[in-house]
Length: 114
Image (cartoon, rainbow, N blue to C red; front, side):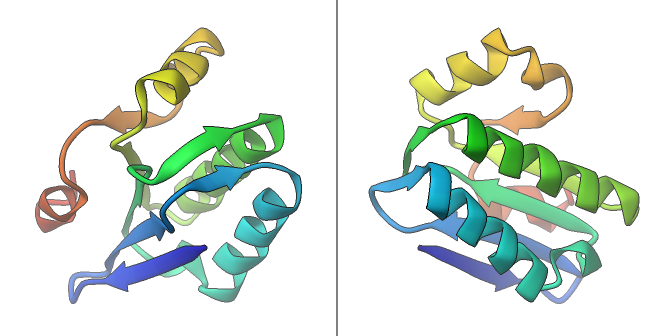
C-alpha cells in the first residue's frame, strides 16, 4: 500500500499504491508504517497522493500526525498531486493553511527540498 524512496540528501517520497483509500485500518497501517520507516529522520518528506482515491477523517488525522512528527524533528512535509476532491476537503477543513499542498512532481520537490 505504501512505498518510500529516499535520496542521498536525507529527503524521502512516500507513494501510495494505485487505488489507495486512507480509511480506518489503512490509516492505522499508515501510522505504523511511518513509525517503522522512522519517517522523522528525513529532512523533507513529500507525500505523493497521485494514487490516493479517497480519504476519511482517520486518514486526515494520519496526515496531521505525520505533519507533527516531521515538524517536531525540524523537517518539512509537502503533500503533492492531490485529487481535486481531496484538495477541496482539506481546503474546506482549512488544513491547506497547515499542510503545504503542491501540485509539482514529487521528484522535483526533493531536489531542492521544496
